Length: 223
Image (cartoon, rainbow, N blue to C red):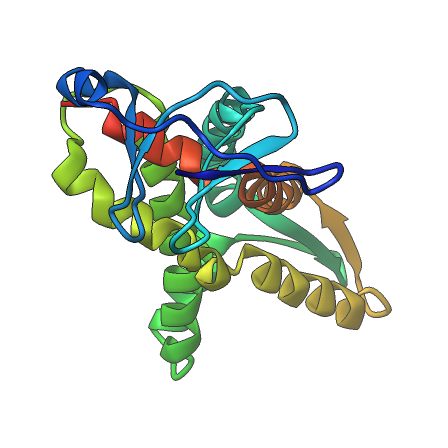
């Protein structure tokens, strides 16, 4: 029997026992992704959550954030191209103008002795954030390519991978660069800069609003 925790007063109550008839119709059964304990699905009130009594994993919640997750996933993917391929900075110095994008900066680093920096930016600021958004896309939207066998390891990767998504660290590097150059030149922020800021905020919001138990439920609804 799963424990139902109320966020307001932390009360606990138990779900109904699983009888033989329920076992025949497994549409209302729920399997804990962490310890494989079997539970009967029950509707619960908003601000409540059903917690596995064995391992403490949150099985599901009374309120849903899937719509917000879908919106943030699509907006994150739309922001990705302008954030990394459009100019992030325009620098005006001594009558000359220079503009650069993340893509151009990484390419310049790969052809110099700074190639380890290029690899770090590609991996932690581009590939991992993009891969996370693609995992969200494959789980929250129906498709015939991601089944339970493929989706299970992807979902297990999704939560801890947030710590390796470092768009915010990359943006802080840009701020430091602007701060050092602003006295010697005119630095102009562009649509690429705005896109990068919005992508950073998008990643933070996506991680904070995601109920991973809902993603597991979406995955288990597939054959």
